[in-house]
Image 1 (cartoon, rainbow, N blue to C red):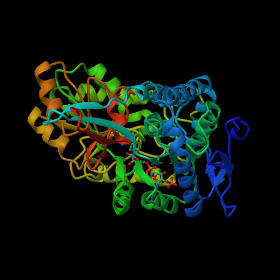
Image 2 (image 1 turned 180 degrees about the horizontal axis):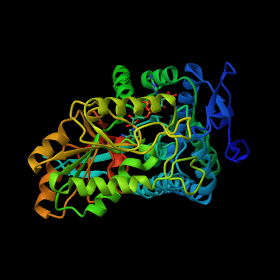
Image 3 (image 1 turned 30 degrees about the horizontal axis):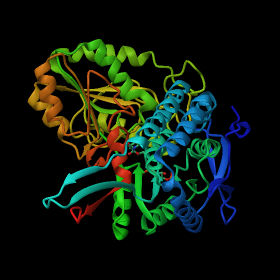
Length: 485
Ligand code: NAP
């Protein structure tokens, strides 16, 4: 697919309803990770263009917040409809710039759109409160109002859904947004802007700016007009942004890295557990924040699980995601590939065995073999660092108490999973895991209806569900007095 021929292809940023280049005229080259060929360019913007986008959003804000919830809901609904109508073309574009198998891209467009649909409905339900006052002639009324200009910085692994999960609730409650997508996957973000324009968002309400991450990020994090910064990406950059946001005391949401434990108890249905591990670990070639990073298997079922897991992995076809039969695409770049390679080599040096895979794929470029390591030791880097690749380290454990301690021994607290058929154990373990999300007998938990987010160094705030609105509103109370006069 030549994405420059797509009606959604834009090589310009979207600021104040106009398609514009960088002031300097400079551009960034974007490559297909499956072929390493250039697929297009986007503007290399910096501080000045970011300032203009923020100011445009702020100028457009009064008109947007003054609309009724129903009017905002209708525009969001139109945006959702357009995404669904154009699902196939958007999915193809995503696979070409991000590399994930085409079926996963179709899934992501549906998933991303589901947040727009969900928040188009929630827009109508931003209820306040009436609170009894201690004095008889008074009442307290609680109003929920839009926070103001929202900045959103997103990663390359979910180029569509990480944007809609933030922007749909912001737009629904009446906030304008300035989006800075990842430089490796800007075209899916710009395609969303094309559809937003068609859906009827007023100019300045949704802006997309591409370019120098640190310059754009600094301006978004320090400009006093921006009242909320919502970031998805690495914990390392999240911490830098948190510090920068403190200068203007902005509201922040941080969806950061994870290191998910995936636990298989000896009473589990092993076939289901293998299917769940495949989904959790190998989706998006292991490049998701909720990927299983440590697979703990109870000793009685360890051999059976490993044998079936290896069998399942041996059937995974690796290649260009546009091929319908491919289930594992390339890694995003050489840097990611080197990290995966380093983690595997280090684990093997520390005593792990390679059950399948274990090296770069014969296709070359950014491809790595889907890999299972068994008998992994706690000292290996892979036990504590996010690998972000198609490698499943498997560990043996004895009992529930031991595995809960192992699972919680991480600075991260995003997703976790376990398989068991014992109702008592299910409650005990679900409550004991120090993670924002717990999948029981499933390897996939994300949906618009649920509050996605992490604890500890995995972040702050929740996206999706009825709670996803809270991150974009300010609570104000009005004390009405003198009512008996
Ligand atoms: P990243 O390097 O932190 O980049 C994320 C975004 O931040 C990109 O748009 C990037 O721009 C931008 N950025 C980089 N340096 C910046 C700076 N100094 N100031 C402001 N912005 C800056 O993360 P990534 O490698 O793209 O994504 C992988 C990470 O995201 C993993 O750790 C993963 O676990 C996490 N993640 C978390 C969630 C979640 O919901 N918790 C979801 C998905 C991914 P450029 O692309 O231009 O560098």
